[in-house]
Image (cartoon, helix red, strand yellow):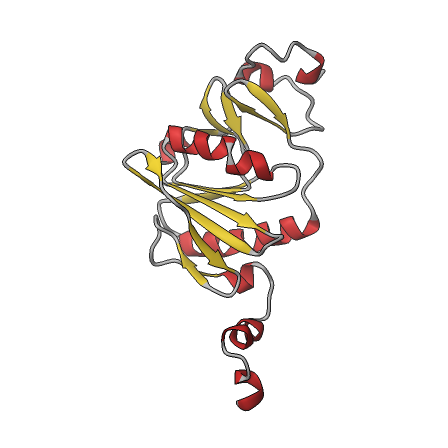
Length: 202
């Protein structure tokens, strides 16, 4: 039986979360359950896969480890989430069952069902528990927002378009070609920035 059949005024715990049906994905934020169905779109999954491949290759042989959904991140007894992608550098946080504590990097890919929560409740949650870098990808507008923790707070996000290169704050040597993540043609970006360039330089 899922939590919606019970009294939603109560705060649910990680122990209760573990008893819920496996055919649905849930998250707990301050003890409130959030249903993550329906399943992500194929475009969402392609973007997630593209990004995971780049990060995994970069981290090969390094201390930090990448993970992708569904991987439980347990902040405390009332806060359990499944980010689309995450990176953990403290190996002691990695258990067989879940990640115990804040990842160093969290990536969420927006969808109609989760977009508001990702930008509001999850931003507050990640800030509170000390996620060093929070990346939000918007497949609809093909933009990326990068939030960096400073003195315990996230400031204004750095915003990138699909035709730009983004570096991670935690991994400044990792350059992310966003047009490859969004599966766009780079020549489109050049033409948009410099009208007539392609036609004149064929």
